[in-house]
Length: 122
Image (cartoon, rainbow, N blue to C red):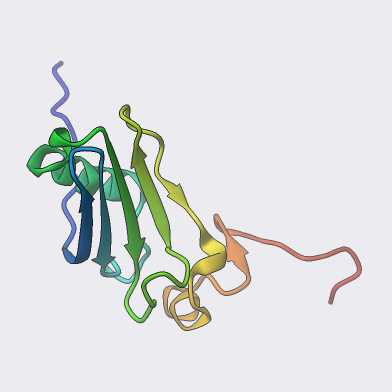
């Protein structure tokens, strides 16, 4: 049985990009919540791959910062993807996600579905 490749497409917009000749290009990308949840690494990797195919192959390096609704650019991204020149894994940084979004998606006090309590915390 042949398995069809999975495609991940979510809505995004380019907030800004900066290029430095042929050396590097950096993108700041706004991504929306997906059906009431945070975007996955795979969905973000698909966006960065689209960006790479559009313009990134002209540059030695490409950097992508992903921001959720309400997040300020340069105040800490939700996730990053780097091509240096080979792709690196998408890194999600939950500690930058605003509490309002965590509450909306039901993750307040939880990371990866597990509640983290300090020893002795009630």
